[in-house]
Image (tube, rainbow, N blue to C red; front, side, top):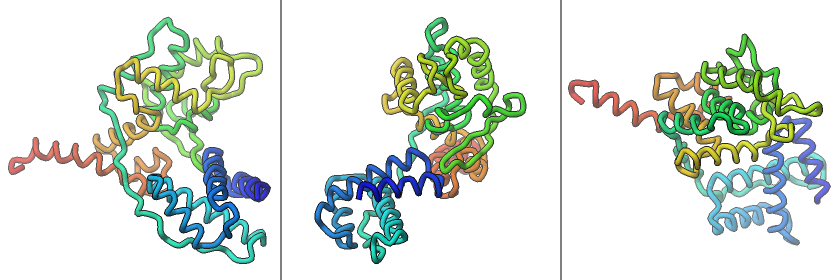
Amino acid sequence: MKQHINDFLLYLRYEKGVSENTIEAYRSDIEQFLDFLGALALIPQNIAKFSVYLHNREYSPASISRKLSAIKNFCKYLYIEKILTEEPQLIDVKPKREKKLPKAISLQEIEKLISAPEQNTPFFMRDTAILELFYACGLRASELANLKLTAFENNFELIKIFGKGSKERIVPLGSKAKTAILNYLQKERPEIARTHSPENLFLNKSGQAITRQGLFNIIKKYVHKAHLNPRVSPHTLRHSFATHLLEHGAGLRDVQELLGHSDISTTQIYTSVSRAKIKEIYNKAHPHA
């Protein structure tokens, strides 16, 4: 079965263009399911038992939904490859997926965070550029880690991003982020780079491409320094990017495009956040409010 899992993941990578993060999540989910299954048959009733098992262990509805989706796709692959004589159908016992409001931080908190790196300290320009870019473009950590030197267009006015499933999108680059990136490229990156360094925009102290975990550690460092909620993460900056755009009048379709969401329903969750701001404006402005 281990070989079947590996073959399935190769199929996802090369034929479906699935991202590496999703592939690793699938691997973990399928292996967890097979460990649970043990000697039990791969039939719908036992998949349903796994769902109940996850629910009893208080996995979130979103996690359960993702794991069952991984199992469903794996079973479909086994059926196509004639490893299974029939495709097991999932019995729908998964709890209703809850919609959680994104956690955004205020503009004042954003400014405190971006101002946290101190001049004349190691990687000041790199870290400032990272913080500016996260907020200016609403990037995922994996997207920022994978940015190449060739990502910028139109004299650093635009940035080309390859998101989930290698989908390409173009996002405008704000003036503050542009200045921070140019400073880093001109003054600091040449000092970090080695002869073996890749073409990634952001490098670590060894001259290698910075990793997602490296980005999380950088954010964590400056969140602590700025005395912000320790739960603030790169994704918080992405949420803040979307929320602040909507609060200042951007259209939902525009925000969908900037975030790289394939389905607008994913973006619509942000409207719940912006409604509070709309209500506040209405109460202040309308004579009969």
